[in-house]
Length: 128
Image (cartoon, rainbow, N blue to C red; front, side, top):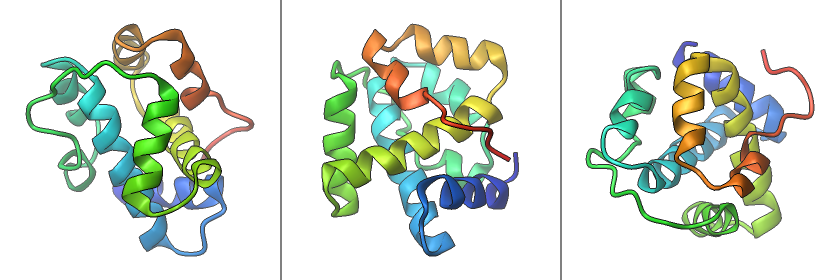
């Protein structure tokens, strides 16, 4: 997917008013998710994203250990919104990643995450 397609899909999926808010949601979610991944996986994920969005991923994936609720808390803090809104934004990003990544890369990402991260990638409908 191209950058504008990802941003537009997140904007629709999260019900955001403008593309700038959607781009912020994408960048923040990728940054937090990237800090959860172990070395190498962040680079593999970045390779499947448009360069402008891939740069939101940490250069050195530290492989921090935290659950999906902590991811939502960090997204809320970075976006300056409440937890419910952060979850909505992050899940819209997760749905787009699920559609944009190759099945093998999605499996690689999911293999590094605890089971509670299924919530991040749960989709309520198709993303286009």
